[in-house]
Image 1 (cartoon, rainbow over the protein chains, first blue to last red):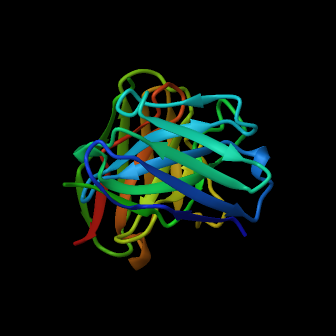
Image 2 (tube, rainbow over the protein chains, first blue to last red):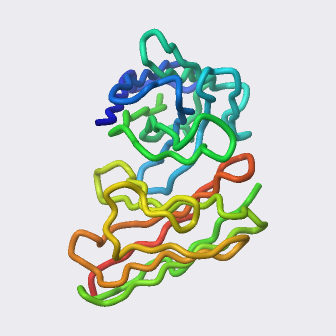
Length: 122
Length: 107
């Protein structure tokens, strides 16, 4: 059974940094791309980042590009999201998600963690 | 950026009735379209991928159709557990984008 467990969320001041982690189990971690998707309180879903199976390819929307960095450690079956220069509008539940495939065409999330809340506020 | 537009925003349906949800892409995304179900306080759940392929464990009453720019999710006979918000998601172009959601509520 696929399991994804996020951690690292919390309260941070504007301009601050936070690192999210996602422990994955139940599948061959390096065989699948992984994503982060966020959801602001009462709002819809927003894709935040994706990383290919072996971590050689990453992509981000303009809203976080240059501030967020996705990475993965295949030896630990763990996905990370390093978030810098945080803004009020980054406040959201952040979901870790396993993708359908390893690369292009397979980036749709098919399994999701329960999410971790990041609150950016002074 | 590919804009995904879902309609209606809210759909009021009685149990046992058919529900039809629409999703339109601002440009062609071929069949790289997924549908997700989200209940309050829960993570999204994949229902359909590739525009028409049911995800593992999804009942046959869920079906997806369409390609290019027009897509439909149909729930043939709504059960109580199907009342939720449904999002479409394109994974053909960067940045990946989601629609704003359709809330399926009990009539």
